[in-house]
Image (cartoon, rainbow, N blue to C red; front, side):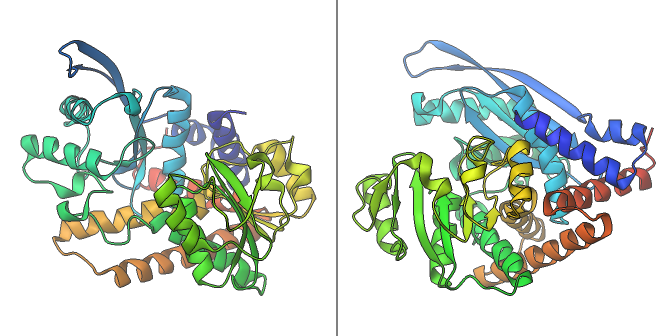
Length: 411
């Protein structure tokens, strides 16, 4: 099932639970604006190349729209639409004053030189500069983009609008980026896991974890869980997978990954088939890679008691049903991985105030937001007698619906 179908399905279930008016329900789904632009640049060899850039701005009832920009060869409009919508609900669940957006350029960043990427980013920014802005739409990095991309967007945007560090988040620290932003999603996953385990009278220490994906989110989550006394017993990335029932030595693994560009060849555990990592024996499973990895094919074999969705929509709706019958508790992506956008909000706030926080303040504020977020989700679960996914969706949709009605926008 693709991302858009799954997101729409969750939205409709939430709207039904909340008893939303059908006109309001329809208007909440329609994006505010869809932008598509042609970006032509001279390549290094002098030939011209054309790429399509776009931005879906889904909803701005609660504040400026917020969401990543991805550089990827198969940028599917449906998926981007789903991700823009998901950002609307995610920012509402996190209770930060934003709406949702998503965008990108259909290109393969691996095949472009640094100067070609810079030219492409600047042309894209020239085309959309009057449609984004500090109080309109605030982009961030996503697949295939990073702090350098944000620096180019900031510079190009500032040529038209004066120095505006708050127009993008995920910037390099030297240009107004926030301390703690790099670890934010992984740290948010830790705080979310702590909140959930706390509810069940457990703590991180002594629990067995399996993490799929060892990119930014997976590696930070592993490191922080390890520091808290959790045992990471299996891990995978695109190069391979390892297990060690006594717990993998995460600091050594991080060093190995830095030197060898991947898990493959690490001697602190036995090599296993990456496909089997999800069904390894553990207490807590953290999918932190791609969407749709937990599906009806493998759901029955999953042995963990808890699943923390660090990736976006890693669990198919069919797998959701199988797992809930087995009594597996799933902490949904829309809450579990919101640490990144929450610290992006802190970055934006610091830029607007022209006053930067120290890392300790960033982390303690993040913990406050994540802990409160879990409490709010649980309250919705009790009110509507539903699981955590629906608790999070009803919470997000309800906040957006209330803002929409208060503004007098409902049809």
